[in-house]
Length: 161
Image (cartoon, rainbow, N blue to C red; front, top):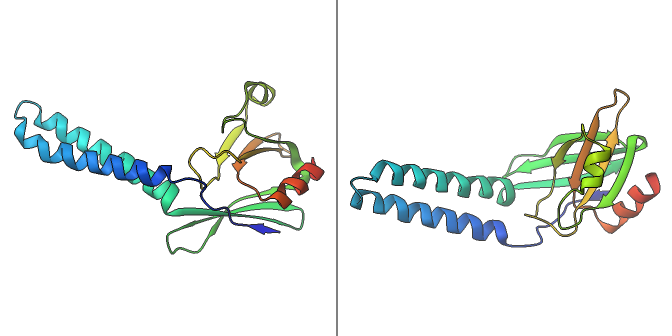
């Protein structure tokens, strides 16, 4: 089974556009402010950086999920680059699977798995349909994966748990 999620909202495009536009405005206004020119230029670079981060993370990056041979695999692609495997986790190590409420991991889950390392493999900024899958390997490493599965994957993960 293979699934490539599509972004659910346009928030990253809006955020990127706003931060870059405000960064340009601040940079162009910097020479008018002789006393605060360095601060304005620094602020402009920070705004550009935030805009660039959102563009790279949410506009130029895509993920695909696959379930094959008892493993859950996540591949990451950026731009024209061919996808590389980001994660390969055994389904028999799945300890917890549930939808996220408002895109956040609940305090109960955090308390149950305090050493959990969380990896966000979503293509949507603050998605409504994201799920958390927690895997515990033989060395007791707790790995949380936030992703946007298809309906079939939700059913399969529910059966695996």
